[in-house]
Length: 283
Image (cartoon, rainbow, N blue to C red; front, side, top):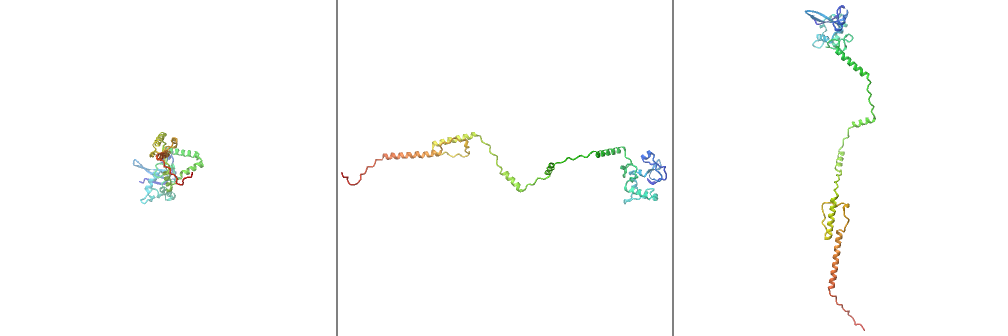
């Protein structure tokens, strides 16, 4: 016995086995296309009829598998009752179209549109699915009602700042790098820390003492190496230096020589006065 059958209802007696139609007691009217599933209960079988628009996606998938051939094409004659619809070519065309496209034509479908899919069980949304759908619809409506947020106006300055940030820093060439390195090399060294004034004073005092000793002795003092001379501020008042002492010494020596010469001249006997030769003077 075939599992499924399609035919035109011959009377108004059969009721639709869909849950909603069954609850409401809706009948399949004469002349309508109906879809039957073979049901066996305790060795007794019968057709359970539905409106063509109440066929679920799962049942449509089963019919598709029944008619599909190995090459992917469909043998619609494999469906029980299809060949009997030859007098109704429009109904045959409807059946072929729905099997190939995988869903019932929307104008014929009696369930919720979301359930009109190949392989979907039932044609009505469950309570949980309906609630989820309502929440999604409410959220969408709220989004439409809420005014769009105004974008803050941007000033000229903000735009200029953005442009500056986006611009990459210019790369330095070889010349610029060389100039930077030269500038680092020629940078003035840090000034040496100032020395305290005490050592300067001591040095100046030592120098003064040395000068005094040189003046007394009359010999030039050896030149000191190493430390720099004290600044002008720390120098003591000028005194007669080495040059003056040197000048004095030769003057004293000259005086002594003159005195010695005079003494020698004094010691020498005075030369006798020579008489002038000539005629005796007449008295």
